[in-house]
Length: 580
Ligand SMILES: CC(=O)SCCNC(=O)CCNC(=O)[C@H](O)C(C)(C)COP(=O)(O)OP(=O)(O)OC[C@H]1O[C@@H](n2cnc3c(N)ncnc32)[C@H](O)[C@@H]1OP(=O)(O)O
Ligand SMILES: CC(C)C(=O)C(=O)O
Image (cartoon, rainbow, N blue to C red; front, side):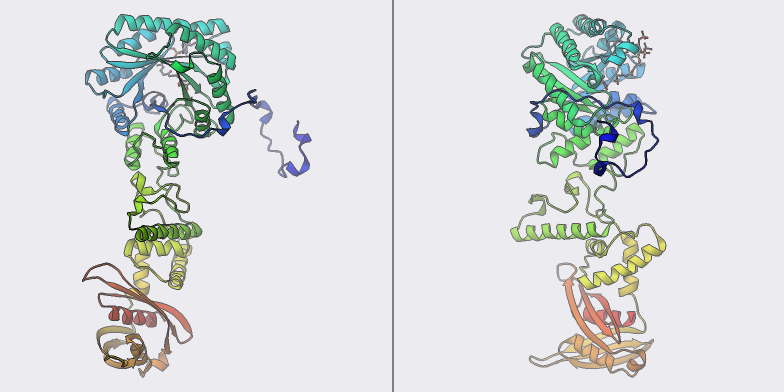
């Protein structure tokens, strides 16, 4: 079908881009009509291999120094990675001596297997094997490219000659292992590089030939790593390729099918997950997706995706910021603020409707926890816009809601509640968020919690003119109205006011309305709504009071905070009057 055969309703209204798209071809689909992977689900973590110290390192502007490599290795071990590719020892003295440092310094825990990568060239294989002398167990990883373009351009060799590179490489490797590593248990990994662009039958043929040499059997596995060296198609195609390969392969029970996806199309995570559904056993990648070009698949995202589905990733991400800081130090590259699960902004909402929903969701969890009398961490996680609980990766809720011109009342109210325990009534939230909105519109940028608090204090708590409350005495007998005597300053002048009413607020309002300046000031005060709550528990607890008043023809809120609830209420009335 050409572009012109596309029905008009499906055709884009936009003009042709002028981009030379004709130079590119769509990747042909895989003929696998009875594919089974679409109906599979992922139920457990794969075997992970971190290639941060190899693929990750080889793609850095400034490859890791020995100290940085060691820090990365220790981090990977601490997080729980059991297979770690530690370098390409034949590439440089730095890589070789790092492997020696690990072995001679006894840095490799008993349950961790290191591996090293080599091209299928005799001298490089020998040097790689030599780097492993003295290690109790390790994997050696050999690769050569099989794809048509590489056969023609890089190796200038026929299919058989390219297959022979892999077969001979395996034989040479086994010979060297015999010569140098008698006390070491060596595992073998072979990668038909550029697997994604290679004819599937040819990849299979070469892998079978390599396996014929290695002779996998029970207790002697072979790892066939099928890399998306360059990601060239939609993720379903990779899954088809993996399912096809896995079905055709002999000795499947002694073969570990491994993935090594790159992210050229930005779909490495999806491709990996679909390929796991297609039967892969093992995944290679890097923390935060470092590696050649657009990087290897991100191990953090994959692991946390499992976690968010209730599956143990077998890796500890509980202090994600520490992981991020260490990786940034080792790679000297920043992690994007929107990186899934770990970026600075990924648990933060600036926009009003998101803030409102998150605030309600978190309050609902607190309510459920109180009702069921269990800690909130024991409840199944369910909160709008937050796929996981930030606490589970060591983040706090403090940064969840941040305020700028896109924010609404929910966000502002969340900050006041979270930071200062002030739970504003709904209409007070609306009123105060307008005050904040004026600021953010005028000044742009973000308003920090401290700045919001400063505005709140100035607006509601710190106004002392024209009215200031100095002292409060109340008396009431059962069944009688409250008698109130308050000391105030009106425009700085000390006055004593007396009032009577159904409660101290009504008595105070009566006293204010009776002042001689009341008429000229427009202080015709009526209370429309009232709310109060404790700010903290215990004998020295503070109380917050919120009073919605009509003062003349204005309707506004006042807020008061005091250890004494009556004084807090009267302060709230003063706050409203002064704001008017
Ligand atoms: C997809 C990947 O990430 S694979 C890993 C890639 N990583 C690296 O390359 C980092 C480490 N590499 C290096 O330090 C160097 O490339 C070395 C030391 C390995 C080799 O260096 P050199 O001997 O200078 O060779 P060079 O790097 O140019 O490699 C190209 C040669 O190797 C051959 N070659 C490339 N890959 C392979 C392979 N897997 N097996 C056998 N031969 C290979 C090429 O055909 C070419 O041969 P030619 O010179 O006869 O044309
Ligand atoms: C060596 C192989 C696995 C590789 O890095 C790749 O193909 O991307």
